[in-house]
Length: 223
Image (cartoon, rainbow, N blue to C red; front, side, top):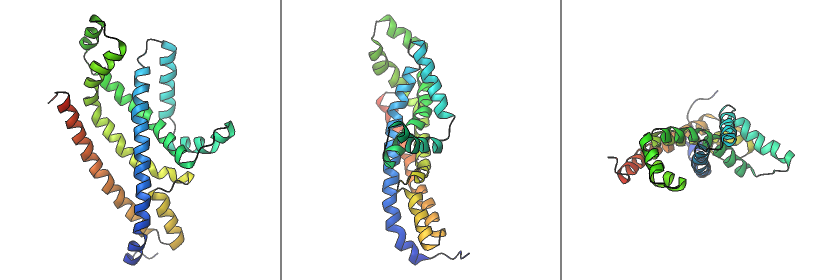
Protein backbone atom coordinates (compact mmCIF):
# COMPACT_ATOMS: atom_id res chain seq x y z
CA UNK A 1 0.00 0.00 0.00
CA UNK A 2 1.27 3.45 -0.92
CA UNK A 3 1.66 5.54 2.23
CA UNK A 4 3.24 8.57 0.54
CA UNK A 5 1.12 11.66 1.03
CA UNK A 6 -0.47 12.94 -2.20
CA UNK A 7 -0.73 16.72 -1.94
CA UNK A 8 -2.43 17.06 -5.31
CA UNK A 9 -5.22 14.80 -4.15
CA UNK A 10 -5.40 16.68 -0.85
CA UNK A 11 -6.10 20.03 -2.50
CA UNK A 12 -8.48 18.43 -4.96
CA UNK A 13 -10.72 16.81 -2.34
CA UNK A 14 -10.53 19.63 0.23
CA UNK A 15 -13.57 21.57 -1.10
CA UNK A 16 -15.68 18.41 -1.02
CA UNK A 17 -14.67 17.68 2.57
CA UNK A 18 -15.30 21.27 3.62
CA UNK A 19 -18.80 21.07 2.18
CA UNK A 20 -19.37 17.84 4.11
CA UNK A 21 -18.05 19.66 7.20
CA UNK A 22 -20.96 22.09 6.96
CA UNK A 23 -23.37 19.14 7.00
CA UNK A 24 -21.53 17.66 9.99
CA UNK A 25 -21.72 20.90 11.96
CA UNK A 26 -25.39 21.35 11.04
CA UNK A 27 -26.17 17.77 12.09
CA UNK A 28 -24.35 18.17 15.41
CA UNK A 29 -25.97 21.54 16.13
CA UNK A 30 -29.49 20.35 15.28
CA UNK A 31 -29.14 17.19 17.35
CA UNK A 32 -27.69 19.15 20.25
CA UNK A 33 -30.54 21.66 20.31
CA UNK A 34 -33.07 18.81 20.35
CA UNK A 35 -31.12 17.09 23.13
CA UNK A 36 -30.85 20.27 25.21
CA UNK A 37 -34.60 20.94 25.14
CA UNK A 38 -35.83 17.36 25.35
CA UNK A 39 -33.26 16.47 28.02
CA UNK A 40 -34.56 19.24 30.29
CA UNK A 41 -38.15 18.09 29.70
CA UNK A 42 -37.21 14.51 30.61
CA UNK A 43 -35.39 15.67 33.73
CA UNK A 44 -38.39 17.70 34.89
CA UNK A 45 -40.81 14.86 34.14
CA UNK A 46 -38.77 12.59 36.39
CA UNK A 47 -39.57 14.96 39.26
CA UNK A 48 -43.32 15.06 38.68
CA UNK A 49 -45.64 14.03 41.50
CA UNK A 50 -47.42 11.57 39.17
CA UNK A 51 -45.54 8.35 39.89
CA UNK A 52 -46.60 6.32 36.78
CA UNK A 53 -45.27 9.10 34.54
CA UNK A 54 -42.00 9.19 36.50
CA UNK A 55 -41.58 5.45 36.04
CA UNK A 56 -42.34 5.56 32.31
CA UNK A 57 -39.92 8.43 31.70
CA UNK A 58 -37.22 6.80 33.81
CA UNK A 59 -37.52 3.52 31.91
CA UNK A 60 -37.50 5.37 28.59
CA UNK A 61 -34.27 7.14 29.55
CA UNK A 62 -32.65 3.88 30.64
CA UNK A 63 -33.75 2.15 27.42
CA UNK A 64 -32.27 4.89 25.23
CA UNK A 65 -29.02 4.97 27.22
CA UNK A 66 -28.69 1.17 27.16
CA UNK A 67 -28.94 0.72 23.38
CA UNK A 68 -26.34 1.82 20.80
CA UNK A 69 -26.90 5.03 18.84
CA UNK A 70 -26.17 3.19 15.60
CA UNK A 71 -29.01 0.76 16.29
CA UNK A 72 -31.41 3.62 17.02
CA UNK A 73 -30.46 5.37 13.77
CA UNK A 74 -31.08 2.12 11.91
CA UNK A 75 -34.49 1.51 13.49
CA UNK A 76 -35.77 5.05 13.00
CA UNK A 77 -34.81 5.13 9.33
CA UNK A 78 -35.30 1.54 8.18
CA UNK A 79 -37.93 0.15 10.56
CA UNK A 80 -40.01 3.32 10.94
CA UNK A 81 -41.57 2.96 7.45
CA UNK A 82 -42.95 -0.45 8.48
CA UNK A 83 -45.13 1.44 10.96
CA UNK A 84 -46.05 4.23 8.58
CA UNK A 85 -43.29 6.64 9.71
CA UNK A 86 -41.14 7.48 6.70
CA UNK A 87 -38.45 10.10 7.27
CA UNK A 88 -35.56 11.45 5.21
CA UNK A 89 -32.05 10.38 6.21
CA UNK A 90 -31.37 13.88 7.55
CA UNK A 91 -34.50 14.03 9.73
CA UNK A 92 -33.97 10.46 10.92
CA UNK A 93 -30.42 11.29 11.95
CA UNK A 94 -31.41 14.44 13.82
CA UNK A 95 -34.16 12.62 15.71
CA UNK A 96 -31.86 9.72 16.59
CA UNK A 97 -29.05 11.97 17.85
CA UNK A 98 -31.51 14.24 19.66
CA UNK A 99 -33.27 11.37 21.45
CA UNK A 100 -30.08 9.53 22.31
CA UNK A 101 -28.31 12.50 23.84
CA UNK A 102 -31.47 13.87 25.44
CA UNK A 103 -31.39 10.77 27.65
CA UNK A 104 -27.84 11.57 28.73
CA UNK A 105 -28.43 15.29 29.14
CA UNK A 106 -31.49 14.56 31.28
CA UNK A 107 -29.12 12.97 33.78
CA UNK A 108 -26.84 16.02 33.63
CA UNK A 109 -29.83 18.27 34.29
CA UNK A 110 -31.04 15.96 37.06
CA UNK A 111 -27.68 16.22 38.78
CA UNK A 112 -27.88 20.00 38.54
CA UNK A 113 -31.41 20.07 39.94
CA UNK A 114 -30.46 17.84 42.84
CA UNK A 115 -27.51 20.10 43.66
CA UNK A 116 -29.88 22.94 44.56
CA UNK A 117 -30.12 23.12 48.37
CA UNK A 118 -33.33 21.74 49.86
CA UNK A 119 -33.92 25.08 51.57
CA UNK A 120 -34.49 26.70 48.18
CA UNK A 121 -37.30 24.28 47.38
CA UNK A 122 -38.82 24.75 50.82
CA UNK A 123 -38.66 28.54 50.52
CA UNK A 124 -40.54 28.39 47.20
CA UNK A 125 -43.28 26.34 48.83
CA UNK A 126 -43.41 28.68 51.82
CA UNK A 127 -44.14 31.72 49.64
CA UNK A 128 -46.58 29.72 47.46
CA UNK A 129 -44.67 30.08 44.20
CA UNK A 130 -46.23 28.19 41.30
CA UNK A 131 -44.32 25.19 39.99
CA UNK A 132 -43.48 27.09 36.82
CA UNK A 133 -42.07 30.08 38.69
CA UNK A 134 -40.25 27.79 41.10
CA UNK A 135 -38.35 26.15 38.27
CA UNK A 136 -37.92 29.11 35.93
CA UNK A 137 -37.05 31.79 38.46
CA UNK A 138 -35.38 29.92 41.31
CA UNK A 139 -34.32 26.32 40.64
CA UNK A 140 -33.13 26.15 37.02
CA UNK A 141 -30.93 29.28 37.29
CA UNK A 142 -29.14 27.62 40.21
CA UNK A 143 -29.01 24.18 38.59
CA UNK A 144 -27.64 25.34 35.24
CA UNK A 145 -24.06 26.38 36.21
CA UNK A 146 -23.16 22.98 37.76
CA UNK A 147 -24.55 21.28 34.65
CA UNK A 148 -22.62 23.36 32.10
CA UNK A 149 -19.49 21.20 32.10
CA UNK A 150 -21.50 18.06 31.38
CA UNK A 151 -23.52 19.80 28.69
CA UNK A 152 -20.30 20.87 26.98
CA UNK A 153 -18.79 17.39 27.11
CA UNK A 154 -21.80 15.91 25.36
CA UNK A 155 -21.64 18.52 22.61
CA UNK A 156 -18.20 17.23 21.70
CA UNK A 157 -19.51 13.67 21.92
CA UNK A 158 -22.29 14.51 19.45
CA UNK A 159 -19.78 15.99 17.01
CA UNK A 160 -17.71 12.80 17.15
CA UNK A 161 -20.79 10.60 16.71
CA UNK A 162 -22.07 12.28 13.55
CA UNK A 163 -20.10 9.80 11.35
CA UNK A 164 -22.67 7.19 12.39
CA UNK A 165 -25.17 8.99 10.17
CA UNK A 166 -23.22 7.76 7.16
CA UNK A 167 -24.98 4.39 7.48
CA UNK A 168 -28.20 6.01 6.26
CA UNK A 169 -26.57 8.16 3.61
CA UNK A 170 -26.28 11.51 5.33
CA UNK A 171 -23.48 13.34 3.50
CA UNK A 172 -21.38 14.19 6.54
CA UNK A 173 -17.58 14.08 6.78
CA UNK A 174 -17.02 10.36 7.17
CA UNK A 175 -19.51 9.56 4.43
CA UNK A 176 -17.70 11.94 2.06
CA UNK A 177 -14.26 10.58 3.00
CA UNK A 178 -15.36 6.98 2.44
CA UNK A 179 -16.85 7.89 -0.94
CA UNK A 180 -13.65 9.66 -1.97
CA UNK A 181 -11.54 6.71 -0.85
CA UNK A 182 -13.68 4.29 -2.84
CA UNK A 183 -13.48 6.48 -5.93
CA UNK A 184 -9.71 7.08 -5.77
CA UNK A 185 -8.63 3.85 -4.07
CA UNK A 186 -6.82 6.00 -1.51
CA UNK A 187 -8.07 6.36 2.04
CA UNK A 188 -4.99 7.85 3.72
CA UNK A 189 -5.59 11.46 2.67
CA UNK A 190 -9.38 11.68 3.13
CA UNK A 191 -9.44 9.87 6.48
CA UNK A 192 -6.47 11.81 7.85
CA UNK A 193 -8.09 15.08 6.78
CA UNK A 194 -11.33 14.04 8.48
CA UNK A 195 -9.43 13.50 11.73
CA UNK A 196 -7.79 16.92 11.44
CA UNK A 197 -11.11 18.63 10.66
CA UNK A 198 -12.79 16.99 13.66
CA UNK A 199 -9.92 18.20 15.84
CA UNK A 200 -10.27 21.73 14.45
CA UNK A 201 -14.00 21.66 15.25
CA UNK A 202 -13.73 20.10 18.70
CA UNK A 203 -11.02 22.28 20.24
CA UNK A 204 -12.79 25.64 19.69
CA UNK A 205 -16.06 24.03 20.79
CA UNK A 206 -14.52 23.10 24.14
CA UNK A 207 -13.22 26.64 24.55
CA UNK A 208 -16.59 28.11 23.64
CA UNK A 209 -18.38 25.98 26.23
CA UNK A 210 -15.94 27.12 28.93
CA UNK A 211 -16.67 30.72 28.00
CA UNK A 212 -20.40 29.98 28.04
CA UNK A 213 -20.10 28.46 31.53
CA UNK A 214 -18.23 31.54 32.79
CA UNK A 215 -20.83 33.84 31.20
CA UNK A 216 -23.72 31.96 32.83
CA UNK A 217 -22.03 32.18 36.23
CA UNK A 218 -21.47 35.90 35.82
CA UNK A 219 -25.05 36.52 34.73
CA UNK A 220 -26.33 34.64 37.77
CA UNK A 221 -23.91 36.39 40.13
CA UNK A 222 -22.07 33.18 40.99
CA UNK A 223 -18.56 34.57 40.46
